[in-house]
Amino acid sequence: MPLAMLNRHGLVAGATGTGKTKTLQLIAEQLSAQGVPVFLADMKGDLSGIAAPGHPDGRVEGRAADVHQRWTATGFPAEYYALGGVGCGIPVRATRSPFGTARRSGRRRR
Ligand SMILES: Nc1ncnc2c1ncn2[C@@H]1O[C@H](COP(=O)(O)OP(=O)(O)OP(=O)(O)O)[C@@H](O)[C@H]1O
Ligand SMILES: [Mg+2]
Image 1 (cartoon, helix red, strand yellow):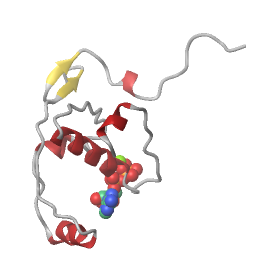
Image 2 (cartoon, rainbow, N blue to C red):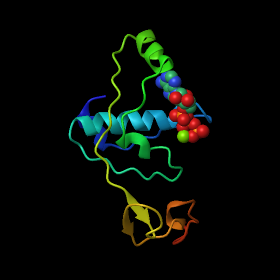
Image 3 (tube, rainbow, N blue to C red):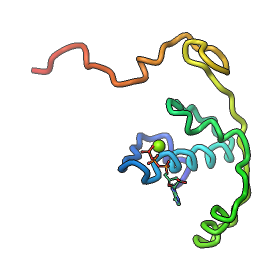
């Protein structure tokens, strides 16, 4: 995906377990490798591991070989923020609820 296209809107959709999180991880890693900072709201804790290189095992190496790619375990620089100051990271004065489903407010359309 050309870097210049990545300032547009996008949607990654799919049934559970079809690779949405992995797709976002790959996009974030490849942007980071190009020096582009990425903000990720990691509500399920799926993405924080981006900071540390993965552990090589036969499965990952087998998959890389299947798709004719070279794979090297790599960590990427990460800073953590903590919503409401809960947990590790730089405290952010916000609660979790604004990040969840929001009820529509405001004007009615005519
Ligand atoms: N391109 C891929 N090639 C091989 N395995 C993959 C690929 N993408 C994802 N997977 C594997 O599929 C599994 C599910 O992926 P992932 O967690 O990204 O799915 P998800 O759509 O985010 O699921 P959920 O809806 O539960 O959040 C993981 O074990 C992941 O390693
Ligand atoms: Mg997911």
